[in-house]
Every structure is written in C-alpha cells, then in structure tokens.
Image (cartoon, rainbow, N blue to C red):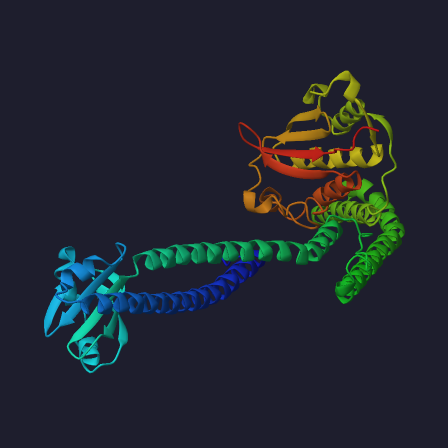
Length: 448
C-alpha cells in the first residue's frame, strides 16, 4: 500500500488535532450550557410552583372550596401540570387525571414529611421537573413542568456545536495544507535545482537569502553542486587529456600497421589474420578516442549559426552512401533554416544513421520536421526497459550485443544526447509503426 505524502499526512494531523480540540470544546460547552439551562429552568419551575401553591392554598382556605375548581382557576400553559394530594387522595385538572403517576415515590415521602423538594423525571418520553410543596399536614401541592422546549433547544445547540466542530476540522485541514504548501516550497526549490543539475545545467544554485531558516541546507546543497561540478570538470579534463595523449601514439601505430597491412598478401595466413585483427582494433580504438574527446568537449556552449537543415540531412545520408530519397521533409520552406551548431547536429544525426546501419537493419527514413529530426530503422526495436538508459555512456542495446563486442564504442548515442542537450533539446526512441525503432531529436530552440 502506497504511503500518503507528507503534505497529506500533515494536513490530516491538523484536521485530527482541530477535530479533537473542537470536540473537547464542544462537549465542555454543551455540558456547561446544558447544566446552566437546566438549573435555571429548575429555579424558574420552583418559583412558579411556589406562586401557584400559594394561590391554591388561599383557594382551599375558603369555605366549601372544591379542589378541582381551585386547580382549574390556575393560569398554566400546556407544559405545566398541577396536582394536589389531600388526605391520600389525588386531585387534578380534568385533563390530567393520570398525571400523579409521574410523581416519584421518594418525592412523595419527602413531601409527606413536610419537606419541599424537586426531582427530574421522564414523563411519556419527555423530560420534566416535579416540584412538591406541602400546604399542611394532609395536603401537598405538586407541579410537573415539562422540559420539551429546553430539550429542543439543547438538540439544536448540539447540532450547531457539531457543525462548528466539523468546520473547525475542515479549517484545520485547510490550514495544514496551506502551511505545508509554504513550508515545503523551499524543498521544491531544492528539487528544481537538483533537476536542473541532472539535466546538465551545472550552474544551478540556491539563493541563501531566499529562506534564511534553511541557510544550512542551502549552503550544503550549493557546496555539493560545486563539488559535483568540479568533479565532473576534472573527469572531463582527465578524459580529454588521456584521449589527446593517446591520439599521437595511435596515429603512429596506425601508420606502422598500415604499412604492414599493405603487404598482407606476402604474409602467411596466420600472420595476415593477426595483422587484419590489429588493424581493426586500432581503428576501433581511434574511434573510441575520438568519441571520448567529443564527450569531453560536450560541456562547451553550442556555436549556433544559420544552417539549412535539409542540406545537412542530405549530406549525412550521402556520407553513409545512402540515397537522397531517404530524406523526408515535413517542414515548410520557412522552417528549413535552423539556428544550430551545424557540426554537432550533423554528428548527432550521423550517429543515429550509423546506429541504424550497424544495428537496425538499415535506415528506412530520415525525417526533417519543425524542430525535430527522426531516423527510422528496420531493426528489432528497443525494449521499453532500455529506452531511458540506451543514451547513457557505454550502454549497448541488445542488437549491438548480438552482433558481438567488436563493433561500436557504446558512446555514439551518448554523444547524440549531449549534443541535443547543448541545444536545449532532448533525444528519445519509440517504436516505428510497422516495426523497427524511431529515434527522434527534439530541438525546441531551433529557430533564432
């Protein structure tokens, strides 16, 4: 299972933290508000009960007073019920004949002992408060006050607080996303700089003044880039120096071998075969040294000049003794003149054609289009797992390996990639429709 990204994890942590904090605040706020409202409602119920009890006591004091009539004279709403227990008998308003069932036995005992009291009960699924006020030794006044409106208010409050908690969690996630986006921005700069160096721009550096808090990281990265640049320059100088020093003795050796090779007919069979083998290896060695020198000079900027790209492609084809009809032109007349380093592009295109001749069954098309050059061959193609590495140095494709180690240096395609990069472009390989491989050089800055 793929692990979530840093930004997602931080945002989730912010969301969970905000949700936990808001949930705690919500629960505390709800409980505090609930207890406060309940206490206030109970105090109001007790005051109302005492007021009604005094009115009932005054009504019962009259001669021949009827308890039902006295209770009926009270001004109460739909959320209040009044009862009188007198000499063990219950009296209520005509609509409340069963209301005494909601009075708890414990409350009745307290009231029978002459003690006023109140208790919360549940009447028909609705919370209520029962208040008992003794009027005399045989008479107790009860008032049942329902808390339906308060319960509805508390439910609404719970919904509001839950919505607030949800919004706080969403806000926490948004804040986490925003914070991580800005906090990770310097890492994006580092990634862009590293990508630039990997693409060949060795002058890429981070600005230490952009983010003072990351100054140590910036300094370390720039130091690493400096060391890498110096190391690559040393390697290039070493390759150039070695290749240059090898050229003179190789030329002398090649000249000496050519003298012997011209007299091969007068040698015995084994000696002639050995001379031929030496001649081939010296030629390959000279080609390798030349390619190494070319790679060593590849970090130099391209020397651009106006070049007729169609004539360049035709020249490459003729150099390899191929027909001019191999060149296909898809660019218009206004796109035939390119601002390029003609030597480098000619060598890059020549390497692709040479690669097709050696390993691809021969080129079938050399295509010139707006900002691109393509070489199609009739070979077996390049497997997808090798397409990203075939342009590395000393990497040989399966077709080259199948032909043996005696041909090629493993640097031809690497030189193509270096020359394309020097022009701000790239090189790639795909399958050719109908079979074979299609090598493509893209030069987005081909026009001046």
